[in-house]
Image 1 (cartoon, rainbow, N blue to C red):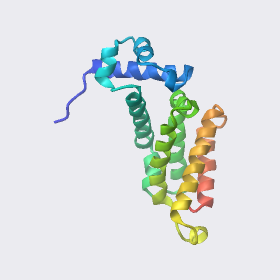
Image 2 (cartoon, one colour):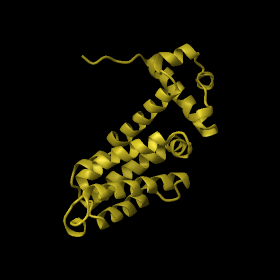
Image 3 (tube, one colour):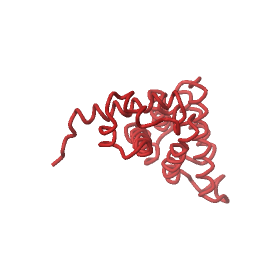
Image 4 (cartoon, rainbow, N blue to C red):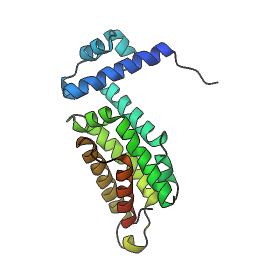
Length: 190
């Protein structure tokens, strides 16, 4: 039987996460204290510790939550798990860019804050596993190590997304999806 989480707990956790995110836009991670988070969230320190061990645990939970929602709530999951036609693949990529666009503050904070490299590393690991399934080793890739191709494409993709975010998303999610898909096609990832 599924248990429901008390709405007060959900509201409190949301307040803590929102406060943490606000603070990340204002200062570096290592300068944020539990008092800062608690005051901004309008909860006491004890309440914070009921939900998180420390700010690193909060960061870890926040990263996991957003990456899971980015991958599983969007049609992007279809991109990594299925062989798609071009239009479906572009739509799947577009859903990822829309999610990032809708959560711009989180992503820009994670990518611009020096002490949150864990986010980039987890994003790379998550996408790398999806790329493993998409790479075709015939044609232009037949004489190249698969791990190297996956690393190359994952790094290029994450770097491109990062650049798009940090330059305030000058192109639309549709445009980004079309361009990325073209690059994937050229590199044997369909």
